[in-house]
Amino acid sequence: MTPTELFSLPFMQRALIAAVFTGLAAPAVGTYLVQRRLALMGDGLGHVAVTGVALGLLTGTSPTWTAVIVAVLGAALIELIRERGHANGDVALALLFYGGLAGGVLLTGLSGQSATHLQEYLFGSITTIAISDVVVTMVLAAVVIAVGVGLAPQLFAVAQDQEFAKVSGLNVRAYNLLVAVLAAVSVTVAMRTVGLLLVSALMVVPVATSQQLARSFRTTLLGAMVLGTFASLGGLVISAFASFKATVAPGPTIVLLALACFAVTWPIGTLLRRRRRLATPFPVDPEAPPLHEACDDDHQEHHHGPHCGHLAVEHGDHVDYVHDGHRHAVHVDQTGAPHYDEH
Amino acid sequence: MSVNTAPAAPAAPPAPPVALSGGVVAIAGRPILRGINLTVEAGEFVALMGANGSGKSTLVRALTGLRPLAGGHLELFGTPFDDFEDWQRVGFVPQRAGATAGVPASVWEVVASGRLTHRRLFRPLGRADRAAIDDALEVVGLADRAHEGVANLSGGQQQRTLIARALAGEPELFFLDEPTAGVDLPNQYALADALARLKARGATIVLVAHELGPLEPLVDRAVVMRDGRVVYDGSPLAQTEVHQVHAAHHGPEDGLVDHAPQVSAPFDAGRED
Image (cartoon, rainbow over all chains, first blue to last red; front, side, top):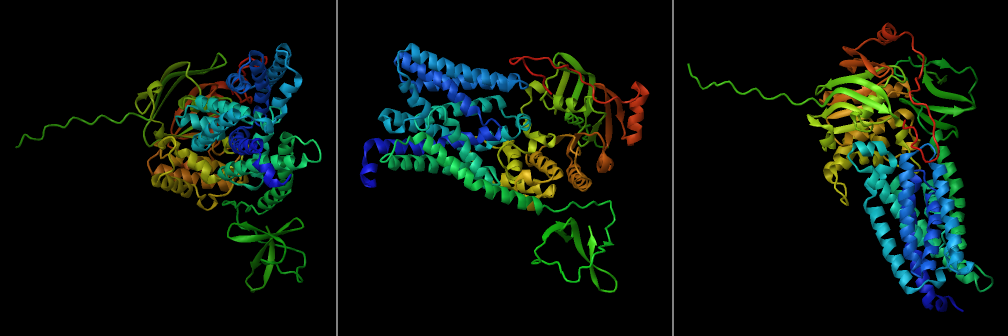
């Protein structure tokens, strides 16, 4: 089968549309979760949503909608617990997560459905997605993206510093709840793409990748959305071509591709951060007299300069050259002969 | 002699920015601040001083509404606190722990979030907003670092970023919680410089400080707290005198007082620090 034939198949086109919308929406919310150091919240909501899916299977209604409802309720509960008791919040969250997963598996058994049916939701099955599901995915994802990007100034302020946001007159509780609900909705959006157990990866890994190189929130958010789309589209295409040779599931391929992007950018980010840290200017003490202690070592052979290879760091009105534990500043004495002061 | 010089009705003096009477703050059901009376007049630079655990930060948190009052009456700009909506007039500078979060943010972005009190939902920044942000960055001396990540700045520069964030909202009243704590001396001077410029513009400033350092010449009035009560309110004291005020009333300082013992289970409300 040629690539053109593959992409002209209706199920593949539906899968591609779902992948694009999921890839854009999940990191948009994930950025706010990571900013608030709640990276695992998506994972927890995924566990809670399992109960929702099982409820849908048990009652014969659409598992997508029951998952949305249960995940939103779970998100509100998590937010309430987080707000009420900060000390042991993580333990309380863990109780909810495992309750959700256990409840889901139990209910699926009661409904008489086979475990394979639940597995479609646990690990995703983007290529079996129906038209109605694609429409729901598109609408929900569009809402998540519009709110996540449109309310970015407010959501940023609340996630960055809740107390400041509160004194600015923002309704912090409402915004926190909004982020939790958006997270719950994007969990169910991504459910068919990567599955409930891997959903958090698509929310968090592109953000972690993006922030390796970004210095601002805006770049991180937009970069994460681009990376998320790249990973979900790329993973889908890779798995589609690979399935001619072996059984390759799209969900795990998408997540592994996102992780591969992180593995590539991480060393670059580490290097950039190290260089920035080294080049931070040394502070100047306005009360201390300037130091004029000449360096004892002989430096006849070496002249510090912009291209001497030593790290040059700003220090007030001059530059210190750093080498072997010394900070050397050029000083010209009365005789006009330059030497190096120890700073 | 003409008689058309009828005495004009004296203009009512503007309401003080902060007026707290009989303030009580309870943490976990235990009264921590008791009987606090504090009125701050427009344009005053007030330093709240005292040892760790004396309640000075708690008082600022009560004045900004972050910690509810268990008793007493608080008015901001003449409006009872519960009806106060005019948050544009108040700027809050928390301790600098709040400067960084899990995602990088540039100095400009953090300062821009101080402009939210003037912005409507789903609207981009206007020209006045950008001018206020640039001005705030200029006052604290960080205009050249606007596009750096906040996490890459030193502690003192982060603290100045938070001051610029409050300043961007163009408030009349500033609350600063320990702006000099853990800040190196060069940055303390830069901080004092920024606060001096705010004071010159006529801002009212309430500042929590353990030690004043370079801020000392700016302070108009010192309020010294001890064990949740105001023990001194008047002209600024030298640091040694602050300790004498403590000692005269209560003996030597014995470190942090742990007011609320921690006992909790997973779903209990945790101790709110």
